[in-house]
Length: 580
Image (cartoon, rainbow, N blue to C red; front, side, top):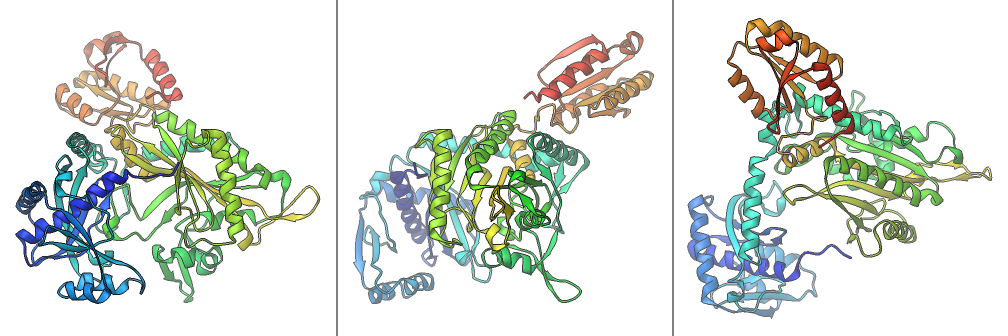
């Protein structure tokens, strides 16, 4: 089944965009409307205005929108000539630009809302504004947006409106947004001293010791799961000649998203935005045999993408990150089994975190590379695998969203707030091996071109940690937590024993930290609770005398008189099993 938004809901949102534009023109007659599409959680409309909209303006606009809806005016469609449209919008240079870009034979339609508002629009819309009375909507915010997303153009004001086909859905969404604010990974990252961002390196995280410990724990788990499945990890250069990227096709399809520079010899270089060409060089470093296949080269090298500053968003959208990457080289008859094997890893790794996911088939984009017959075959192969694993019709199809070199299976998971995230991907590639002249010797001693499967399970480690931070609200599972046990002494008399406990925990591979500050124990406990540390060991005179420990757990667990060895055994088992 194809991935579609509710068409009626999108039509309602589109109609509300016209209501919004009419309301803004009523309150701000000199405003120039530009474009106003429906989006996944509502709509937005861009306006050219002299001064930015304020929070007070948002309230007035929402009130005016309600008034327009209740008046019950009709939406009326009218087809006009290009000359008529240009005359009608002669005072709006943005509409003029859009009209002039239309193909010569394109039908130009207008939509009226009442007699005093008209907009250039394909439609469709609801018949009458009263059809929107049951919609739940909220004029949320306004911020700057360049005309057509180009920073060389004028800065406009974009008004966002959350809109759903009933008020209950709107309230649920607003509650989710409030909960998401509390769970914001940037806020938790600062509170728990995990990472931060600085204006001197936009979109590139500074990983603090605790955060870097957690990042490495996640990478170690990833390595463990892949090593036992026959994956071989490598590392490649950060900087490659443009020759490599031109051969791969990235130069033509991806150059604007790459950091490009000249070396000391005046030759063009680029920081790698992905690892596939480096992996191809590893494959091509020696002659390969059919007996070597499947050949799985994994890596976690840092990669760079030149994202626009306005698109950066904490760990979710960065310029520097580590991809949980692998490039698997297979023969044609190994495709199905290899994809099943990759999905088994996904099942394991998402299962550890309790994250449900769905699979989506993304098909040939407009700027595809290669022969159409090859694409058709690749898409058929992926459909056959998905039909076998999921059952026919039990996965989504995203038309035209494949990579330029091949179709792909995308892994989309949901967090505890119900938000869907595009995470891993499995991309079938019949193009790059041929472009690079890769070959292996088959059983008949003939040269054959391998098929390349690009795959990532978690996506970028940075983004995945950002998502986990919000999913768990900073209450990380014990095995992943950057500090698993905080040891705290009540007085100087118990400091020596507290140090012994910390050392023994560290010797057993448990991430422990001693809080030996001259502070009251209640203060130390409160700080550890704010840091969401799984366990606290409190050491006083009684513990020194009996050579035991007292623990406090995040789940309101309080136990005294416990032997340290038995506690270490319990933690070791919990970490090994990766309990949630």
